[in-house]
Length: 100
Image (cartoon, rainbow, N blue to C red; front, top):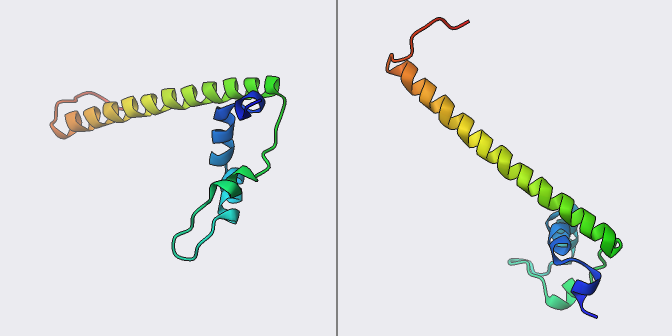
């Protein structure tokens, strides 16, 4: 049985990128000047492990959340471009009309 038979790799990544996971990694990092991790220490970390079914649900949720964030970022970029275009037109005197 391999690790991927017990835990989905994307959930390992999500765990270590979460505030809790980052705190765990920081707590085992060694070195005064340049902190580092050795593979043995990482392998000894106990990760909360829901059932594979629950992991699949969580993985699907994380995928949807990432897609939603991507959509919001694209919307923000479009709104910024629109704002920039309107400001430019106002500055050039090209936008006339009454603003309420």
